[in-house]
Image (cartoon, rainbow, N blue to C red):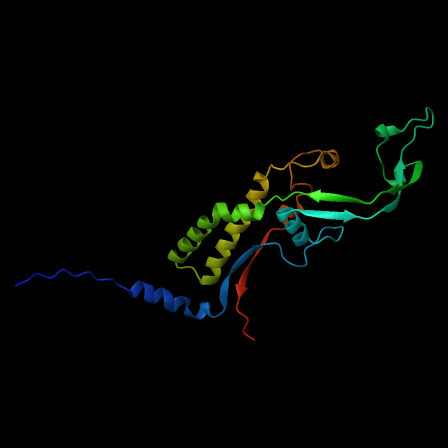
Length: 199
């Protein structure tokens, strides 16, 4: 009598997992991370727009401008204080109207978002897998992935070194490190669980 050689696959665990997620799958679509509409710097510039400019680079045309610059003058010797650097109006005793010619500002691409995806996409998948194996809800699984994505993007900002800031930017910021000034770009990274539109 010939022997038997059987291979069995137990689908009970998969079936339970599918049953548990069935209801949530109709409402939770996924997760996204980055910058969302409504968040802006104090000067009104949307953070998402700045992130896009930094990611892909841009050439911005600045039209001719008429401005008043303020300096602090040493009245005893007639020399400017602070090596002639500009000061706030309330701290000045010398004002001068100037015309700034039209010019282009070139911002080179610094792909911190794409770098994060290329480097950590597999890690995000592992976070999802681990979360599911722990029996967490689908929404919680997506939140865990979102947090991991946030962390990756922030780390990518820290790691970007090239191209360095232009000399004029270095004089203003005091650093050649790109993407970091007030820290608002990094602080504004967020994630959002994507829901299906039920309407």
